[in-house]
Image (cartoon, rainbow, N blue to C red):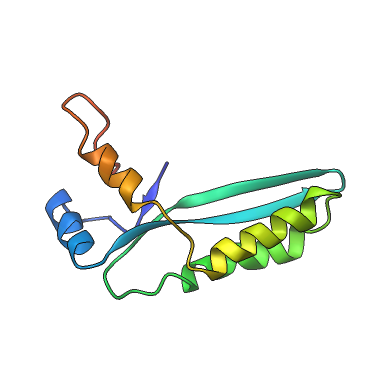
Length: 113
């Protein structure tokens, strides 16, 4: 999965930002087509220390508000779930990303965009 916001940063710089409060965040969006509803995660966004994360989720929330609630029965349910996640600042996946980057040699390193 693509990580947005780490372009040009070294692993050391990313680790320094994480130490100061930076984090990796995913948002959620929902799209419905009558009886089919799809709930999907966004790409991963890197938020530097002190950077607000709600603003980046607004686009996903608007998409969900426009296209998410149409499907029956899961559209309204997934729409509410997605909006809840996005309005709380997204889902923090920092631990999972850092665990991947700290994996033993030969494992997948921190993805670069």
